[in-house]
Image (cartoon, rainbow, N blue to C red; front, top):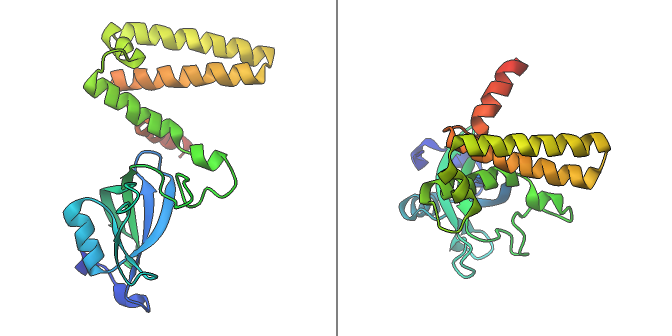
Length: 204
């Protein structure tokens, strides 16, 4: 974890460090806040994001009244050392308007942006905890062969709807395909990040 002494708060006229808050699971940008040394150190010590509120003139821990706190995952400075990127796991909506992100605006797709990565984290949790009654748990219990078979079945159904040009049915079946593929990735110790690395390598 970065140390506050490594940052250059003096570059900012008020001595505060802007902190960009990003969902660690979906990579969605959630909000922008500001930290002074005390807010920074409290965040690190408690594992929940605390800001310096310029309007209240005091420290403010996100979620102190709503319960929608931001669980700290990591912090990194930008190249100029005067801005922080804070990756978190949000517990509830981040925006005071009740939306997941302060940047949702009026576009509903902004609320679901990055959901596939969130779904991956849910599947990873199912694999770790194996809760009873979960369809995902049953798939993991049956093993890789059964999961791979389901991927094949869903791929065929997706292709059928694509050829038939049934848009809604195609989206439905493709969603089933993605879900089962995520389960298969997890069963094989892989993730979306591994696919991204491979695709990036090919792109180069």
